[in-house]
Amino acid sequence: FRYAIRPHQGFDSSEAKKFGIGQSQPLIPIPAQEGQQSLPSLFTLEGSPAIIVSSLKPARDGNGWSVRLFNTSGQEATAELNWGDNKAGAMYRSNPEEAILEPLDTGIKMEGWEILTVRVTADGKR
Image 1: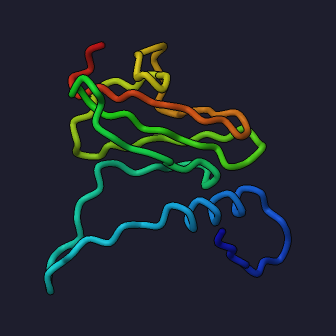
Image 2: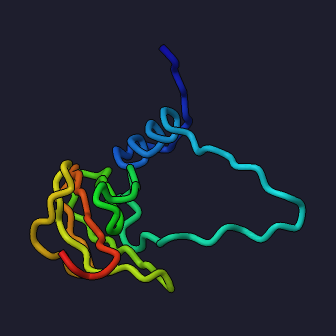
């Protein structure tokens, strides 16, 4: 077992979840050379700070990405995946097997504590 103690002003379940995830799944550093520019982001997650990306991986069929989102609070929240200059296609609600279900709007609404798999196609086709 490993314990971590974090001082705080008052209990915030969303912050506690994010802290716990950060302790159990730390960021992985990669080597960089002096003067190297920062690596470009594939996308940004905008909107509610309670919604976090818990996993990102290439889709099994090679067409796009599978993004797992987690609402770390008990309240409904909305976020948006902004792909910038990256050519992302349509976004769909998905399941753990990456089946494409109904289309998603730009603003992704999530219920409290919801875990959502988003399937993003590279070509906009199902």
